[in-house]
Image 1: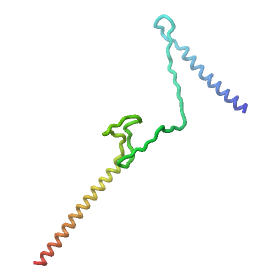
Image 2 (image 1 turned 45 degrees about the horizontal axis):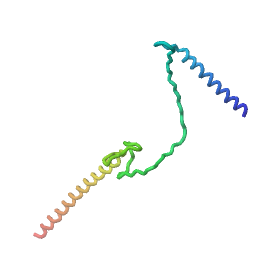
Image 3 (image 1 turned 30 degrees about the vertical axis):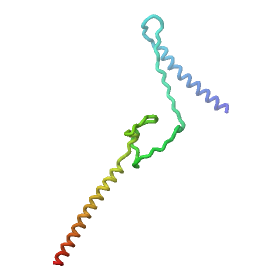
Image 4 (image 1 turned 90 degrees about the horizontal axis):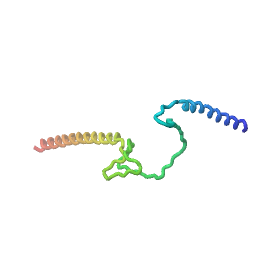
Length: 133
């Protein structure tokens, strides 16, 4: 335990000593004087922080859509007011477009089937009229 503590203290002091030369480099920088008295130049202070953890939502809400599909983009944010004509999210229309195309193909197939049966009915009645005469 004591060896681990000593190693941590050594690493801490080594990090502190590595930082001090950079402070000396900033302190040695000369700044032009614009008037009477001392003039100081503010140097940027950068600090990078990495946070690791979990987040939880304050509120959860179920959103219902008239059509099923994958959400491509959400246009509004929490707290934004959406009017009656407003759009909250945009759905991927790939499957809807495919369903429309399938419906159009089925309509064309049924139109062809109706045309075929119409011809068959006319053939039957033409044949029957010839027999009756």
